[in-house]
Image (cartoon, rainbow, N blue to C red; front, side, top):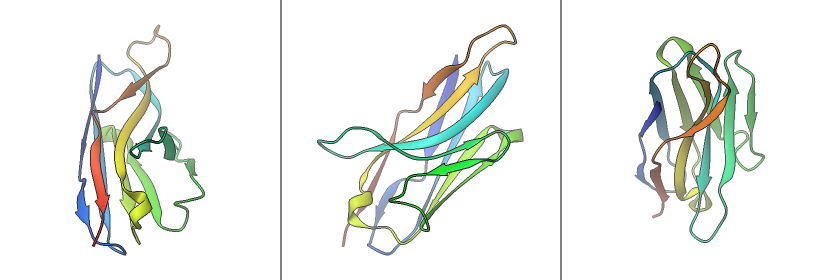
Length: 121
């Protein structure tokens, strides 16, 4: 199995910053992409940002210019630097990885347990 462990969530004031980290471990042959999704109370889970193994990124319009996603392929770790945080960024943030466990495997989506980010004064 592939296990994703997130860290870095917490409570921050509007305008503040947080950095989320997510490390993948377990039986991993290859990871195609990693990313972050979030889910606010009463809302559906939405994409925040993704990054491929080659470094191509995709960010939601709502976070462009404020959030940056990066990745350390050697460590199977993805980071989300969140600046200029707003109350509407409050949500549970989930790490995602599209990975292959063996060379003959198919690509599967794996999810972390989620980390709470609360932006409030």
